[in-house]
Length: 205
Image (cartoon, rainbow, N blue to C red; front, side):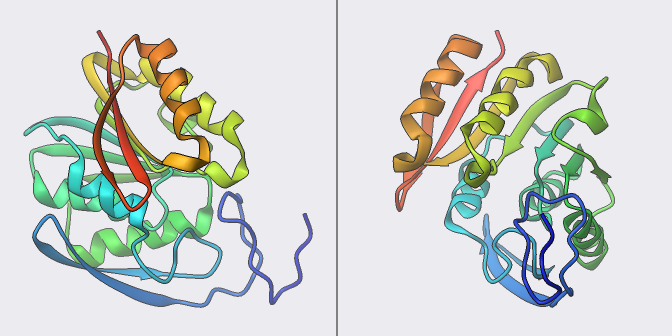
């Protein structure tokens, strides 16, 4: 891939080469007001996308423990989780270096200290860690192979009774993802649905 300087790369890109065009998005999430800095070549830079919003509103969070926001983008899911439950230790990972930089900026902007943001592909930055909850709005546009990998490797990163929660468009891989989660975990539940999206939950048993 060799984009021109004025073009945007896909957000699932390690090192965006396009010129960064910064912006701000604001939203009320779980009853609280948040403002995030965004940029070109990151996912949903102009607004909190519907899938992310639904996952945030529906996600189950423990009072304490370790959370992983996989594919965090500029950070809304993990940062909201950290702001809601200060007793959590939230790890956030993204392959996109620009997204990681933005997530760190937003962590400081919003003032959450219980967050650690790491650069890397999928679970590699946390390969030796286990979590109580894994949250993910997956990069469906790069293909279901990556989404399937996210699900299949999740149990190895969850503690016993840990929860894997993921959002998907019903008509874009929804049925396939349900089948993958059922096969991987032996259980899957739809915990929210709205505007063509579903939030799916599986429990490590």
